[in-house]
Image (cartoon, rainbow, N blue to C red; front, side, top):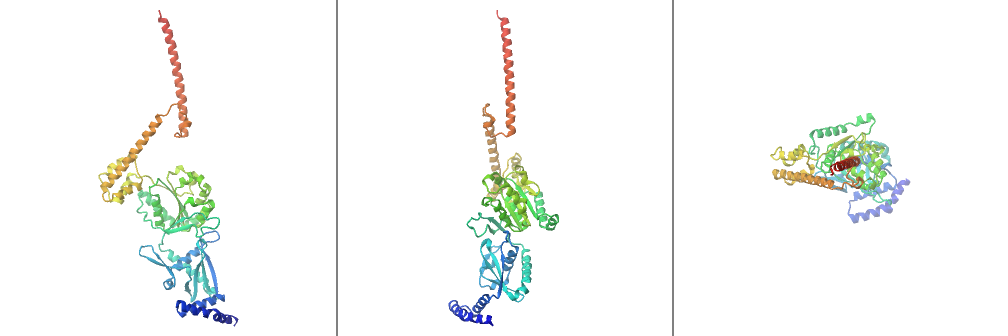
Length: 488
């Protein structure tokens, strides 16, 4: 009776005047206003209970329940009848997707009970709040969460949109950058395994390795290993490393996390970023050799980088692929980086050889053979080559005339060959013009072994010179004696 009297007082003091004002100002239907007022009264009387689902747990890792609830809410058929929703473009240009406005309650019904979800907070501190009646809690809470799991798992089996994530600068000490570290956009790179230009046998092996990884969860667990795979892509710029990463993402249907090391504050910050990546993702660190070369100017240490590859922080999530790229051959890297366990697969992307050139000509120009092919093969076999990206760009520019495209490729190859020959002549000329008295310490061209060779050569030259002087002195002295004998 006391609760009923409190409700009556609230209606008389607040609800009725508010109802009249809203009715006049917004001309809202009387039924909707009455429902809103009734919910306010229920909340005031503590009829409902609230459950918070944070986006991240205490270790700053993604809360999988948050993701599953988000997927589930986006699938609700009641969104079409909601008072406020968001319209966003879908995977295709003409697709329009309806999404809930999480700043307003999203209502759902389960087993005859009404529940609602609402978003609170911003960025990494965002949470989803479930609201339901106390009297329904024991009856529906567990079955409702199981229902959410089942629906979200079913939806995630459908090929999903791939996202590209990039990290922003480290947060400021005063709590800046409250919107989180990872920014994402739809990943629309068109490359696939079939369109990547590389050796056919190697492509088949890599594709089989990736497909086997997708099915290897139980196998890895039986071995007591984390379900992850790491790749090292070696090759000069323009040889197709980035396109290959995009093709991997398309084949696996994984999101891509591209880590910008210049925006990483220290080793702890790198760990935090890795812990915030999700399952079914490819984590990319590009130009690893340049990063190690400039290690003194970067905040991430070698030990921090090694820990990210196979340390405990790399075990914070499963079903991940880590990809590192270098612009040089792997033997120039520290052995600790490329040892088995840190790098599982190494793939080399060379400059364009003739079989690769023929593959490019087939893809870009539709040519299986041409009278200029032997000329291209001769130049390439002489040791001159270009990157596949360079040759591909020439073919795209001249795609309307395959013959002109091949002539342009030949011209570019001959220019490179001429430049190499000129550079070799310049180095040879500068080497021969050096003074014989120049010490090895005055030049940085020689390696350590070369310095020893030069020193030994100079010692030998000195001994020979001394021997020739002694012989010359002996000949002269003997000549003087003979001359004295013949003197009259």
